[in-house]
Length: 393
Ligand SMILES: C[S@@+](CC[C@H](N)C(=O)[O-])C[C@H]1O[C@@H](n2cnc3c(N)ncnc32)[C@H](O)[C@@H]1O
Image 1 (cartoon, rainbow, N blue to C red):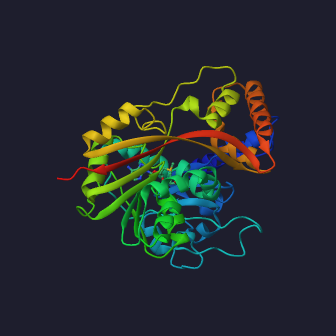
Image 2 (cartoon, rainbow, N blue to C red; image 1 turned 30 degrees about the vertical axis):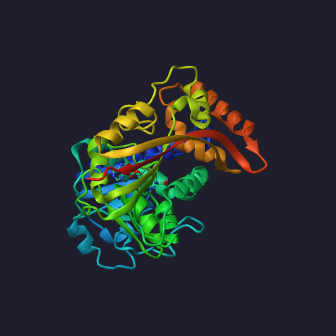
Image 3 (cartoon, rainbow, N blue to C red; image 1 turned 90 degrees about the horizontal axis):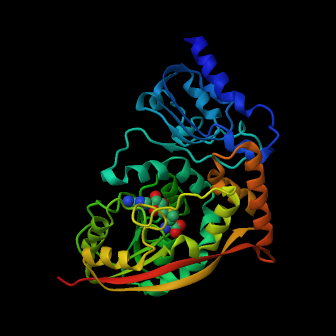
């Protein structure tokens, strides 16, 4: 068994030794980011050789040295209850909120550790893929880069708030609230605001930021039993395009609104109107025709076609549906903008051979440099502001 374990560790650690000809940026992309160990006895001390794991699931493994979990550099750590109990020291164990101070290399950002044991939630079958994604590497990456993501879409915030017309007596529901920026903005206007999201890493960031009169709940907005007719307004910035059954989801949201209650959403316009994505895809495609994300299934473009939006919201019990086209620049940051974009969109280059990949990332860098302004790297984007009211019953 020890041999088997050593072979596993050797196999996992091998790719991170030495820098390949493609350079650091590409090398980072092949590092092991997610690892589930089941059945095998594991020494946490061995796993410490794996740098910057995004998600480590040890819930089905036999961890022989639970105390050494404190040395792991991992953002999402999944343990089972027995392991958590054995790791009795709250200050040393990352799973119990301990920071393992002094052992982490200087300058590394604090780890966000999510403890998953014993937690369950109801998710519609059609939303399980989103649950996995937003609680897996995608959610961890978003949480880790939250300030950047919020900066990218910051210019849509005022449009959303103006349309929502929130007053101090309002109860506000923020759907797919992510790190909670829009929820806090609603509460800043005096309202009480509830943010719901599927993603534990994002909600952890939201809770960490705190705020008066805000509450965050982990829930699938499509099926969560919200109190009937509780809210005056439901808002969302890019959080409503991922429902497996959008009519059911918006009907559920409608039932949580008072009669005449307001809906204000920001969603993306079609792909071809979003310069940032067309530019990244063009660079990283390396000449291939890439599949286009669907506009009639969960994807950033699921609410990009006006006739579909009108159909969904009408069927879900909304009236006075209006869509205004918005076009705003997206700010990707300054010196490290390229690294962020390459990290976030680099998967598009998967499938290219090494030379083609190197050329694709060079093309991406060229595009980023061409979009550098004195205020940082900036690309165009296009969104819809969608407003509607719950039909009075
Ligand atoms: C693109 S992010 C937007 C986050 C945030 N609204 C913002 O503006 O920064 C989309 C969010 O929708 C959430 N989401 C997707 N499907 C959901 C569902 N069925 N119920 C609740 N949240 C969902 C994801 O977890 C994710 O946090």
